[in-house]
Image (cartoon, rainbow, N blue to C red; front, side, top):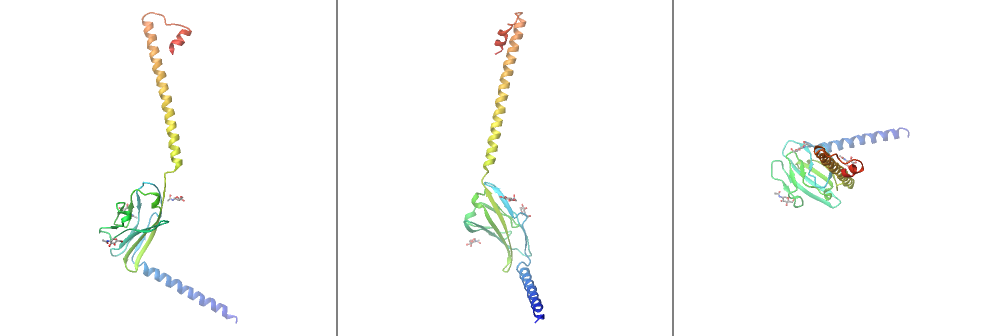
Length: 201
Ligand SMILES: *[C@@H]1O[C@H](CO)[C@@H](O)[C@H](O)[C@H]1NC(C)=O
Ligand SMILES: *[C@@H]1O[C@H](CO)[C@@H](O)[C@H](O)[C@H]1NC(C)=O
Ligand SMILES: *[C@@H]1O[C@H](CO)[C@@H](O)[C@H](O)[C@H]1NC(C)=O
């Protein structure tokens, strides 16, 4: 009865190994020939921005590229095309999407509702495809930003007010100074004492 556990362990090890091998082979067959590179799998954006979903594929033939969009509001096809031909853009994204030969798409003027998962599938022929996902977060322009802008504007207004008062005072000084000089030239002594201080303003 002793050798049984070790024997069992061995068969289990072998079957595990076989399973892993099968998995690797299946994956190899599935993705044979197509590879996909996504430099930025998460994109944060604010409303009204134009977003580039950048990908790059490589395969032997000319593949079909398809982009779909999934979110809380459901799943939609965005566009499908073969590089070098006219893209078939879905009704929901008409006039908002442009496609590139490397498989990337650009989405113009995004809104909060465009947040979600963008799935690209590159299919060379049936059974040979690769897919990737890009997550897009679109947020409203932050309230803190507006707050900062308001503070900045208030600061600018204050600076402008100080400058204007300074200008006004300078102007007044120059005027008084000129008047004083004219008085002197005429030989009349300028008023002295409290009268002079009053005359300044
Ligand atoms: C996007 O925003 C989230 C938080 O909302 C943050 O964790 C993440 O690092 C940001 N990613 C990029 C690429 O800026
Ligand atoms: C794909 O092409 C676009 C437009 O030429 C470019 O901006 C983008 O960087 C490319 N993507 C990659 C991953 O090279
Ligand atoms: C474009 O896509 C629609 C729906 O996916 C399909 O019915 C139509 O045949 C396609 N047109 C072309 C030219 O591939």
